[in-house]
Image 1 (tube, rainbow, N blue to C red):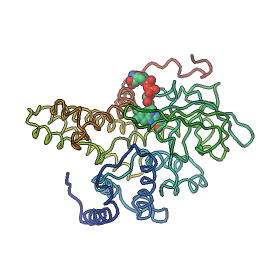
Image 2: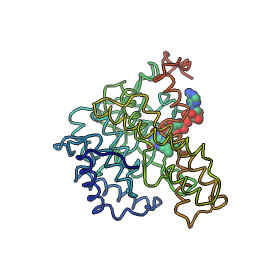
Image 3: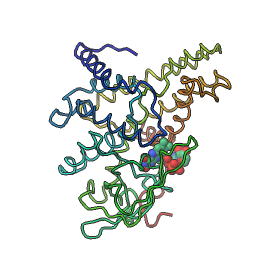
Image 4: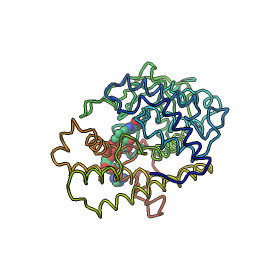
Length: 395
Ligand SMILES: Cc1cc2nc3c(=O)[nH]c(=O)nc-3n(C[C@H](O)[C@H](O)[C@H](O)COP(=O)(O)OP(=O)(O)OC[C@H]3O[C@@H](n4cnc5c(N)ncnc54)[C@H](O)[C@@H]3O)c2cc1C
């Protein structure tokens, strides 16, 4: 969609287009995600190219590798970048949009100095070691333990659904340091060198044949205290910074995901009847979502943190993507299943399957609805019986 750029924004857009035409030409076709090593190398490389040109952190000061730019410039870059199949997924953004903002908000100057630049330049990729077999939606229920031993912490436990842990250099880890206090209060946030002894990463084979997720078994892993972010017992506060950024970032526009206009064109071409009412609803949602994101970006540009309302973006986007992809696949009939020779249909297939994952990752639909109900609309909270009792007494 076009929108009205100011003269300065139009000039920046042109500058970005020229830079992308020069540097992103190899990304005109989808990448082979099954080639994990190849994809990872390309992702590192693309991130470095962006960082060297100042596009990896447009709003940051020039001295820190940014462009001293505005939020709108960042939006313009993302819009233009999304025209290409560039490797910019979670493999990179867990570091740049979740780990780094958390470190910059809660870390020491030394930690900020140590970790910002390598993530920004694609030299260090990150994974998120939060979820566990009994701690997903109820993250504070986690059981991975960290016990202090001199200047180190010794970690034991298991994480699951850890995207890209098999290629990550570093991980953000949430562990329990005190079981005698209520569950949210006994957690601490750490940074983990993923090559440390005591970490066993086991890929989970997905139905697609790809292995994007992992189980991560942690046995007597030692983490220096200098890799602790925030105070002991302040892990929940730090994790909230990470999760708010995740919910804000997950599920933005991308060249590999179909939009509503594409769906409408596709259904018309197939000769099937278009459910105009449903299509109009989806179009309205898509536009609403776009302007909602602009509003969030504006508040970000004023230095505000995206609050619980940010959850609305992912909730609406994931459901809209699933609905529009389903409409396109329905119109295609059996070809919607066997789409080997049809890149357009494959895109809707990808939208359909990815939206299912998106409705879980970074907070399920139900959890986001709870969050919006309680923290945005101010409705009465869910009954939480374990809120004020020590974790060791929760069963
Ligand atoms: C694509 C993808 C990538 C992921 N990557 C990572 C990663 O890199 N790192 C990481 O740490 N985790 C990752 N996860 C895990 C993700 O955070 C969890 O799957 C998610 O938080 C849900 O937790 P769960 O799977 O344990 O489901 P559960 O929490 O067991 O939920 C099961 C069902 O119960 C519902 N439910 C639970 N509690 C409530 C409630 N209070 N009210 C109403 N309904 C409720 C849920 O909505 C859901 O439908 C990823 C998941 C996906 C799908």
